[in-house]
Image (cartoon, rainbow, N blue to C red; front, side, top):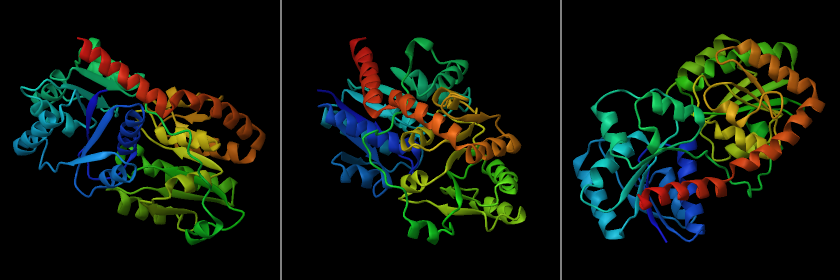
Length: 360
């Protein structure tokens, strides 16, 4: 049995935090001791407790918070941790400091395909790690281009819980969001941040709605661009067509109610929300950004368009709405492909990385 501390000190709840929760719970189900280190009262901590995963509170003021690193080190020693798995860049710096003069090994996850900065901070985070896990080949290429030793690099894709049974959002819920019966619903679940390119999504919906008058869209998620996105939606005349829902606990149910699921990213580590759509039987129209083509095979399990090309995305959305036979074929093939991305496979791959680190 291994004792693993999963460190994620982010403040919000996004795809990365969901992966941490599923990974910790999956390891616990496999007979290991998994503890999540998270901010007290944060959504990750709350959900971890609800599924029976122990939580150690940690509230660093920054990634080089020496007091928080010392507190984490005490937990490493007290719990006899074998592995400290850092799931964000800030967590990686904290783990690098905290493991000093302990027997614990450090594994760092890299979930984004942003280029690494060549500075002392990056060296601290990654050079002191015993292994780095990239969630896609695309992320792995970015990491090695940033100077990380490829011998310490492993690729373990994110996974989703395929055992979930998610019912589509009710008619009442959709009506409360302005979606009337008979609407052709497009749903994008994504944070409102630059690399998700929400403005291209808006422009694609305006173009698609000209050909599909019954098209309605939900943007599920929040972020620093919310006011800007709302203003742009109004400027484009989309007030009755696109609705920004903000953060929703029922994001899965809204996605399962879609006629088409989209992701308009210009950068993307993998795009695990597309795995959700594929598992729910929802046809996908996304971009070719980052690791998305490793999930969605263009023309086989979904339709892909160039990043930053609203017209191409609109064309794919219109095609899926108008050709339901094509949509059915793509979703049938997607339901088979998504089996490659289960939580169980993610747990198995991650444990194999731990084993290689401990053996060395």
